[in-house]
Structures are given as structure tokens and as C-alpha cells.
Length: 155
Figure 1: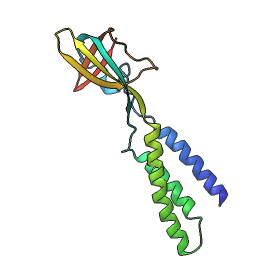
Figure 2: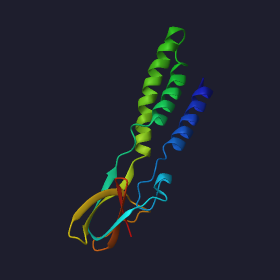
Figure 3: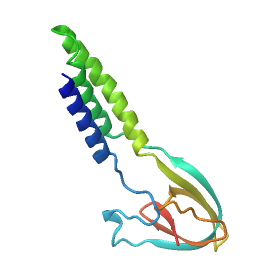
Figure 4: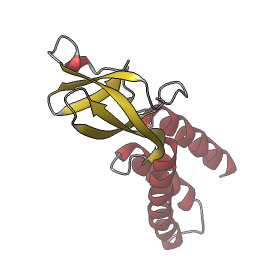
């Protein structure tokens, strides 16, 4: 029983680490679908920067599913007869909730809200992930790149 629980925990950890990596939200990372697409460019100066937290994923099935499987396996080792079935159900529910929370925490990102005064006088604010620990600084000249409803700040 302990061996099954240990293996289940190892599987959960591996699946969560593999499944929790999501798309980067930095200004320098592009998805495959963004490659070779036209990006409209506007120039401006950073007016202000505020550190923010970009919430982690709560819609992923990796954490919830892996947690439910491991919880169900662990719970089924409790008791005997119908107690095993009840333990499996309770373990699966608890594992799913815990797995979801782990995935959310693991996918949380350090972000920055960047307010930019464009050359045309317009002011825009957008949030993106901090790239390599480097925040934009007020007074820096930047580009805003826009394509398919997504905008990013870049140097």
C-alpha cells in the first residue's frame, strides 16, 4: 500500500510539472500562430510600471485529473470492502481539488502593468509577464506590437 501511494505521488508530481508549463506571456515570446503574421507597430515612452501577479491556470485538467487519479488510488487503500470504494471517491475529490490548487500556484507569473504614452498623445496600459526579471522603466522608449487583438510591449 505504501509503495502504491509513493508511486502515485511520484506520478502526480511528474504530471504536474510537465503539464503546468503554459504559454509565456512575455513581450519577447511568440506562439507558432503569431510567426509570419503582420504586427501593427506604434511607438511611445513608458509612463509608469506597476508589478502585478498574473493568476495561474484554474481551467487546466492536468492538475485536477492527476490529483484525482492519485487521490483515488491512495483513498482506495483505506479500509476494506465498501470502505475502499468510499475512500477512493473521497480521495479522488480531495486529490482533484489539491491538484487544481497546485497547478494554479505553479502557473502563477510575475507580471507588470506598463502604461505607455504613445507618440500621438494617446495613453495605453497593458499587462504582460516580466521577461527574465527585467521590468520596463519609466522614460524608456518602447514599441507596442499589435496583432489579432493581442498587444505586447517590446524594445
